[in-house]
Amino acid sequence: MNHPSHTPIYRIHKSWLHSVLKWGGTALPLCYFRILIATSYCVMLQLWNHLEEGVFVAINPFGHSVLGSLIGFLLVMRMNASNSRFWEGRSHWGAIVNASRNLARAAAAYTNEGKYFSGLVAGYAISLKQSLRDSRDLSEAKEFLPKQLYRATEFYGNQPTAIAGAMTHWVAKQAKQGNLSQGEVYYFEKLIASLVNAQGGCEKIQKTPLPFAYVSLIKLLILVYLATLPLVICSLLGWWSPLLMTILALGMFGMEETSVEIEDPFGTQPNCLKLEVLTITITRDSAQLAAYDEIMELASEEDEFDDPDSNI
Image (cartoon, rainbow, N blue to C red; front, side):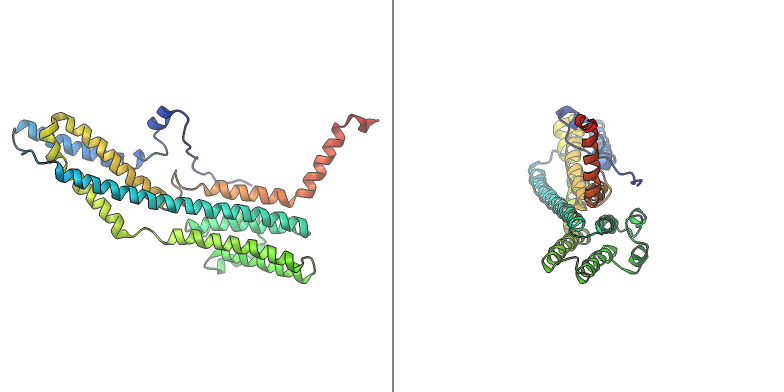
């Protein structure tokens, strides 16, 4: 199978300086233009103040200190809320990976249709990934799903539920044929329910953004703070004021953009969850578990080939 390309995983590098100076995966590509505008704005006001001495009356910085503390508190709250959504999304996908492995393992052990069921598991994971990204393109899952089921998913508003329903119907069919006991049916249904529950948790995150009033307020306060900051620091710091403006703009815009990026953990931005990696993991593991007998037979043949006594 040719898997689609995906954004690389950005990890914390062991070198502290390497992490500091890195461009990709950081907030800088998202907010550098706004930082440049804020710095240029401060340079122009400082130049005006330098050419027209005394145009800026030194303003008491107490008000900006209080406002800066408030903005810092709000940004920390904003980042914590976004990080909680990110970690909750990862926890749900961890549950999906575990349940998928257990389903494929049980289907291969208790029935003769392990490969068929592992295809349903892989198709479910792929369809959920696409659904969380507001896409109905299931071409990636076409080789895993039966043709009839693949076509039937087009009639469902929520495509992963169609495949989850197919799993339950498969379990019911196996039970009617006497291939599964009541205890085994309960085990399968419990795992399928855990998939659907995790799906619901992911959809809750996707469809419930942070309140717009809260997000808008933070943006407004940052704008007011940075727009009025030169009136305070130009008279006090002189030509050091653009440097201070750059640092403060980097901190505020960077924290805000980082929060925005991880607020939706299922997107395609560099710091979002790597759903491609997770779905490939599920596809690979479910296929290998379904082929357990074949793999064990191959391993046995290799042992016989390597055994020197086998030629005696």
